[in-house]
Length: 382
Image 1: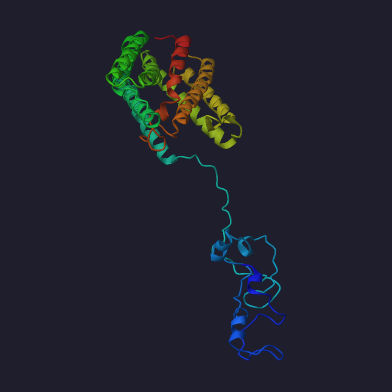
Image 2 (image 1 turned 90 degrees about the vertical axis):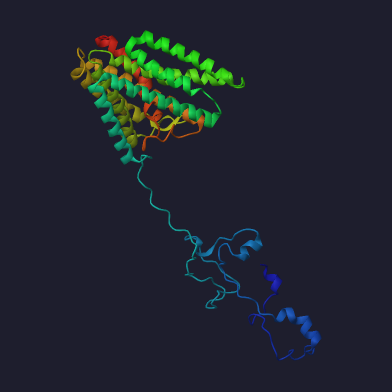
């Protein structure tokens, strides 16, 4: 409020009401006197030097006033009217009471967090590992079934997110049937069978989509063919690895190298990472993490090729580990690119602490053909 609206106070203090009438030599008291001077005889309200933050007086000014004890480094201000308690006119109170809504000191910075429930992630990872190992070394056909189930679930997650976020209707039924057939045919008939199953699946997608209106046909079938290649066709190479005489140990090597690569990238990147690898695609990945993935995977590859694979040598394992670290990182970045385009963090919520099935297959899918090819080159296909 403006001080002039209240009139200027005399030197003796505030204007106060008087019942003694006018001073000597002044006009006589009476109704005219009272009416003329009524606004001068009203008591002036006590104005605190620091109004409460957010009160009515701030709204009258059109903006909130900040001052007083709200900021610790503010210097004391002077006031022409004195402090509210009247102890020291002309000087602001040196130790005002703290305002009840004054901001609290900022909390101390916390340590880096993994961003996920590590307990749940470890538990789910151990459970999946137990299922895979049991099926892998008991009956190979059971493991092929595990691959087929993972493929169908991955296709469901991908097609669901495409429809939810982009309105793309990639037909799930022909993809699921053709994807499972692709994995089984690859295990039974080899690479030639996998290619034939892939071609038939693409044809089924084209025909299935014809049962709906033509709007968006090209968009939907393109997404369907991409999904067929990205998930079941790449997963078929795991079944091809399994067909060798020591196929179970080759698949175990493939899985171990992918997991070790991911673990090395996380451990080194979390502790030492400072240079972003691809900030526009995956801000959490660092160049230091990539070096950690390469180092861990090369050591694990040397050990696996030396002790698990028939006819393998340690130097082959070094090359295999290097290739796996690179392909796994590219696969992870590729799915991150898809998720950024869709505007989502995870492909699903099926696996607590991990996201969806596709969030675990992202690095495995492009790594499978790399491992299959290098195994064939190093020790043959038998």
